[in-house]
Length: 207
Image 1 (cartoon, one colour):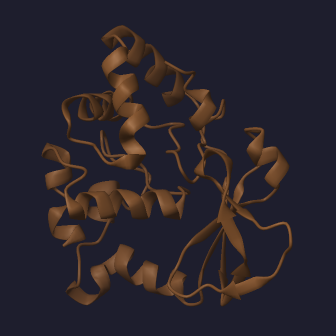
Image 2 (cartoon, rainbow, N blue to C red):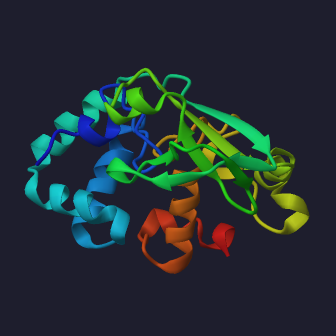
């Protein structure tokens, strides 16, 4: 397999196209490897991890996740509400970059995550983070959903992830993570690309 840090970085922070794994519980990460291996996590974004999970021994999995669990997640994502964003395209590693010729466009109903420093991000610098551009008003709407379920539309996140959203036991922290990555996970749970006993607890949420 390739080194974990090629996608998740030596800091464990990851990029928008890969998970931040720094500080996650060992038991949670071991369970995710099992999910990739047994088909509970699938889809185009999971292809590499499925191959790695099948190729690695249980001891190699545990050694890797024990290392990442000891790392403290650094500040990594800066969220900016805006009506317009730099014109961007997918580049190397399925990372999004602003186009060289510049220009802006309406953000619409999108999350656009771009590196703070494109050159450093492309070279996998573990100390250069990202800007998540989101539509104006997103943070207030998100807070209403996360903290109170938006008056019954869904279930407050704190019930499982804790009052500070930094996780409870084997349930992971959802603080400071890439909005695009989190969106993909919720979408995968909705469309059946991510299943399993723990994901079943989120079915009422994503519905």
